[in-house]
Image (tube, rainbow, N blue to C red; front, side, top):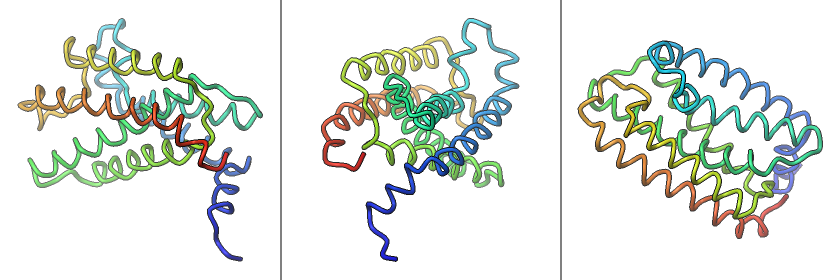
Length: 198
């Protein structure tokens, strides 16, 4: 059988594949919250929701996948998933590779984080053709994302990379512009998706 974009899209949107993807993301989300356990233990409760960035991004996508499996749509979760999956997928990979440059070693966990966060970003983009969010939803996601950056870099709740502690200001600046880029991806995806399979 010839592999075509239509065949690939059929696979990506098939209910069985979506269920498998949901289970993978659910396991990753649980592990992500566990990974942040030590930081949450020293975090004030008011900031809990803003600390575990990556698992919250994959949790958004879990809600999206569950809605699709049930034949529903949840546009606000779709845009939150797209923006945060791409943002934190790229962000975590940059931080881990930067740590590798600084220390020369990140271990198997570091490489696992690079692979899993790359997959996060990719899956967010893969489903652009299926999203149905509007500009209003993008505006909400923009406020959420930029507010999260303020909490992270003004109130000091950013994910902790001890080997990069001297670069916090640079990381904060990079994170802000990464957020802007991901918000624009969501804006432009509203135009792009009419040319994509859905």
